[in-house]
Length: 183
Image (cartoon, rainbow, N blue to C red; front, side):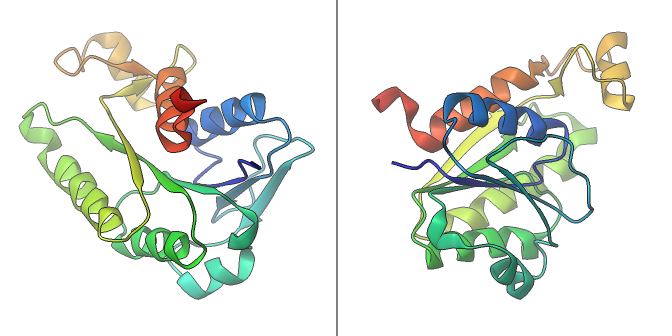
């Protein structure tokens, strides 16, 4: 089993952690990290950076070789086109699973639009025949997170949504996607 993976959004906060953990667990696996920009946050022998916009299904297909991968993890948000590209790519190439990070609904009015958007994305992924491995997170944190969310967590702004560490999110997404507990 090759355990090759495409990580859509792999240069972001959560994507970098998933990439590092995947590389540690499956050192021989090829990891294709996609992003719209030319960021190459993590380097390694089996890490391949692919600059492509997942909103463009034809470009995505041309840039990647689905027959060489087993899994795809999507860390996109806010674009049904991107979600459909991932779902359709996974189906076309008979991937084993799609990994996805959703969000828990704590009934916080300020989060309602984001929660609804993530739920719609999950439904779209689940419309295809490929198994979707979803992990619903709360606010994702790290002691090194210094953006507005990280500052808000440290200030207690998210206490009603207990933060979860990025390491746990990555671990859960990988476990659920690969069904690691079966090995």
